[in-house]
View 1 (tube, rainbow, N blue to C red):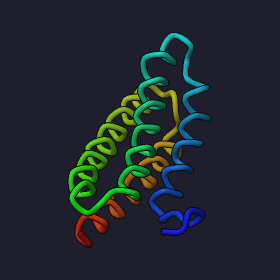
View 2: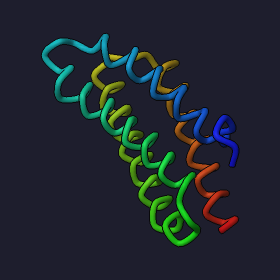
View 3: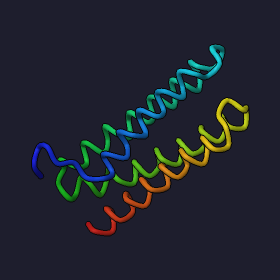
View 4: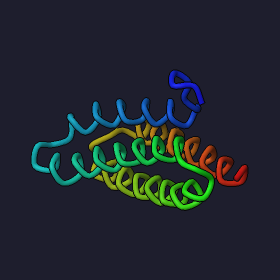
Amino acid sequence: MKPDTKPPIYTLLVELTGWTLDRTADLPKSHRFTFGQRLDNLTLDALLLTTRAIYSDRTRKLALLPELNLMLEQLRVLWRLVHDRRWISQQQLLFVNSKIDEIGRMTGGWLRSL
């Protein structure tokens, strides 16, 4: 892979990370540490794990990608909790879920291709 060429899953995770950082900054101060930090860290971890997978051999990818799927599921749960507390709108929840679903489909396709 060329150094300047990243797969679409990487690009989507970069977008999701930026969006997440913007949303978590607006969470109520009393919950910013609990939910905000967890969402920020989990999203950044998913991005970093994807970066590792991009540069890993096939065997390592087979171990990393299921871990990415688990992180995506954890993100879905946390965003649902944030929405249930009305800290984000229904439209924002639909947006973030659509991004997570798309990343999940790409992860599944990547796994199948291995």
